[in-house]
Amino acid sequence: MASGPAGAETRQRLLRTVKKEVKQIMEEAVTRKFVHEDSSHIISFCAAVEACVLHGLRRRAAGFLRSNKIAALFMKVGKSFPPAEELSRKVQDLEQLIESTRNQIQGLQENVRKLPKLPNLSPLAIKHLWIRTALFEKVLDKIVHYLVENSSKYYEKEALLMDPVDGPILASLLVGPCALEYTKMKTADHFWTDPSADELVQRHRIHSSHLRQDSPTKRPALCIQKRHSSGSVDDRPSLSARDYVESLHQNSRATLLYGKNNVLVQPRDDMEAVPGYLSLHQTADVMTLKWTPNQLMNGSVGDLDYERR
Image 1: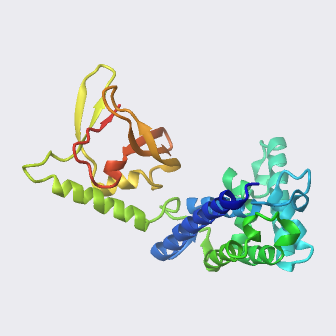
Image 2: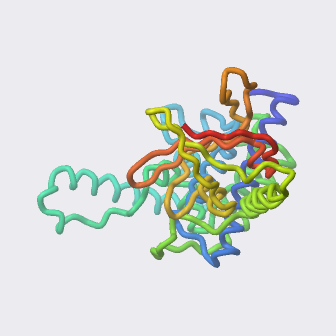
Image 3: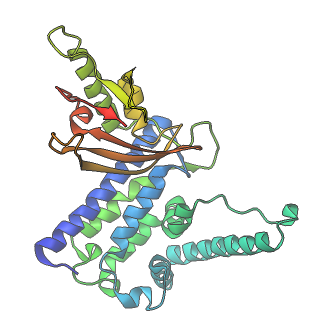
């Protein structure tokens, strides 16, 4: 494991990720008055917390042969910490239900009515089942606090939870999400959330840039050109700022599968590579790859020529 400045930078990067995910969940709770258990923010939050909890974990703490290190760690903590013991019992019961139902489905597909109800969990939710359940049971912050207080038993010297500053910060960050109420209620828009503060700022920047271009001395509003295989070009009016920015985020029409900043793309051979935001979206029928120049994301389009092929 990296030590010194490299180790400190790794810890700070892990903490920044958790802070970002906590911010997203708390914003969703404020704007929508509730957080749905299937929210994409829950999955990304669980992944970020799990990365912190596993950072610098001793091999003995997770068991030599255990593929699920979080499960092994929480069960070991449960031997001396009652909340973790209760959590372990609930998650193991849930795992047994999922496994037994899967086996019965394979053998009794023709008689679905006799099957017990399978929990409606996505593969990612099952992957982070222990952290997710601890969050919903409101014990995740308590377990992480216990790990911080007893970190020398479970972690290497450079681990995040061993750090006298970063460890307590992580535990305190989890208090807010653990205090929220999560719902299973199905609504028309339960797979997406209201805009975050960052998204609202992006909308304002793009909208402002379009207003500035209304001046006769400036270029007209940005248009998207789509080239067909025949070589013809169709001019399309640009999307509104609200619709365009919403299309780059998780929304009611498409799921955001991946996003990465500062991806370099060379539009033409005679142009330099341009940095932008790359995102992968999926709807019920199609998967779409989008790339948006940083100039557009920042609301400063200038002389940018943008083509979608």
